[in-house]
Image (cartoon, rainbow, N blue to C red; front, side, top):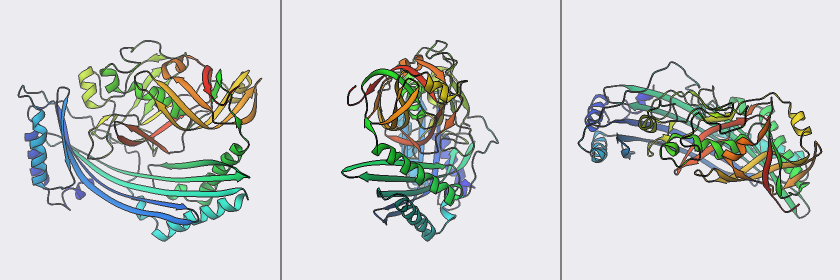
Length: 472
């Protein structure tokens, strides 16, 4: 069990830790003691050799006291009674002496979304290095135009325990793995890249079969070779079709962050105060769901101990709800949705997405493409920039195609999608029936913290959108 890492193997006594916590949170509105132990590893094979092989172990605690909107937070790697007492003294500075009514603890559930098994122990070091070497050799043997291959394998096993005043305890054990392949192909002086990754909250087994990793290499190489033939992207307003799956990252960034509770409580989101209003075209339903088995963004409980949930954010174009942690839910008079997340024990929790996606519609993808007179079809994205307050974004396409008169044409280079989330949602005119989640590679940054997430959507058509490129 998770508690063996925090009490059986340390000098910290559970009963004394509970008493220190209870005293520290007397008069507070909320708070907890968050304990964490994690093991992680990462392997990178690049330039025909194993370049990186790392292994890391971390442990620590974070103690939080919440009074009104104010938070006192202290953390340490030292799991001792003295360290916990010093932290308790620090967080009590936030208390005003006016007293508080301690919020009820989170509901409990027997739901378990992933195994306890430690993926780091399933394969010896030599087998992991050999796997990456085989991936490298396979990729280089596929096509004479392959000039560079990079393959990485990473895994994590995290145990957490959350203690609340009065003796309430929540525990969770979280595995996480990812395999990624990047291929660079060249023809003369021109070089282009493609990549593909996969992962989830499980062991390595499903991702390291020859069928699985060869499929990743084939996809990465396909992207690179497509981009070798790419033409300069056009510029201007036009129709845009987004493919299924990973393109949901645009929805995540341009819309999802604006639906997190803190931005709406502070009224800095474009969606603040708009519950019950139409914010998207009919047929657009957006959900955040942390309860999907084994998915990268899923959690049995969030980092405050609240079970995750399926939260409908937008239903048939109407704004229905926000993603909430405990603090913002309490201040807004709403229910916590299990979206309180933190990068580690050294970080304060905040409302964050889990797996965020748009549900499927009724149109065939081919029908959507045929409806486009003049536009582009975006299949894959790299990074982008988003302003949370306005929802304005710029996203770079790593794979896109010209579409004219209902037919997919030449691949495009340097295509960028420019717009703002709230406006784009109103211009969605067709929603495909081919819903897909991403393969398990998402990482979301907010407030200096990174957490694993999932995204997804079906093929969708946006009637008008600005495309940045080299020219018409």
